[in-house]
Length: 148
Ligand code: DQA
Image 1 (cartoon, rainbow, N blue to C red):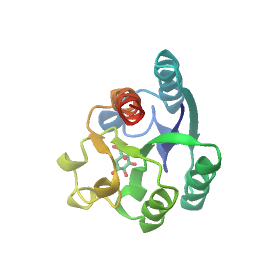
Image 2 (cartoon, rainbow, N blue to C red):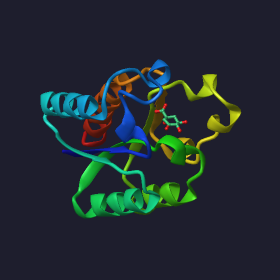
Image 3 (cartoon, rainbow, N blue to C red):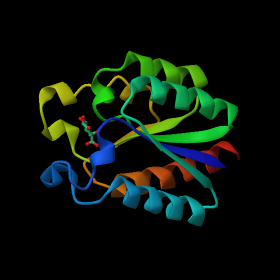
Image 4 (cartoon, rainbow, N blue to C red):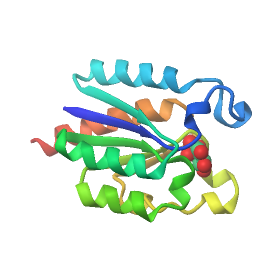
């Protein structure tokens, strides 16, 4: 199946951005890791990052036309602000897992609320780059269970 890994604002800075919090892994490392895991599971993996909310909304809309079966999404700061991204995901009705590198619940209270979590299949927070790998494995199982 076709999977889409989406990343929101400032994640292009990974590797140099607050390394104590987000680690030294770069977004390019995460892209390669996602491609490897998806390939091993027999899936195609598209990868997209943007700092702009509208570009993420449009990428989600385009995913429907491309028959993307599942989205792994780190919405970054838009997690805590964006009704538009919530509505885009509901609009295309593509199942998704929300991923955060850091444990958002161990941080400022404004990060404890997500506009996406209650409509996600699941949420992974605090496991670093491994979270993307686990999300792809969970997506694979979800799609297998659904096709039975
Ligand atoms: C983040 C957590 C968000 O609160 C923050 O705004 C980010 C990254 C994470 O991956 O831990 O930019 O989504």
